[in-house]
Length: 218
Image (tube, rainbow, N blue to C red):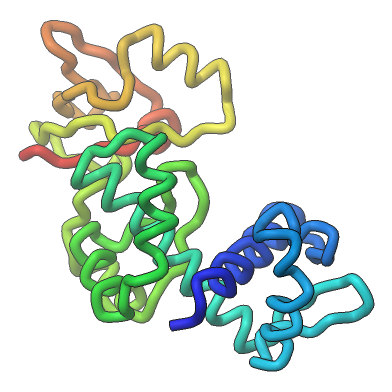
């Protein structure tokens, strides 16, 4: 594995490109690593063939992009493990995932991905870069965390997180008590999707149920 500073910088550059569809530049790097180390680290990364420098512009090479994607994959899978299995809070989850990503081997990363059922998104709703294990086994495994809409009638689950861009929808779900940690049972799928929460039954649209991710309990 690379030096942690190099991996962190690869991750930041990859994530910046993912979120902005633009290119990172030298001016941004001091936000991510110590300012006095910027030039030395960038030059080292260029010597290793991870990046190209065009004046102040930073461009990932094919090898750099591949390695950056793997760092991001390890980080986001670590977040899922900490959140879904260990039930760690968001504040601790973020900092711990940053530590995990630097020492997870490819074998351990694959094992975590398999354990979690090859999740598609991290707890923040960002896509997890897939690995070879995802392509081989996605349809064969029973995932630990999945959209509520994919539960079978009678199955019980605990809400792990909710991913939606509709703030009003999130407010509505919160007002109904559908929050992370809430235990629910899928009462029926047809003619409408109905969940049981304590003594209360709630009907949900299919697209709403797809935004709610649950951890199977039975």
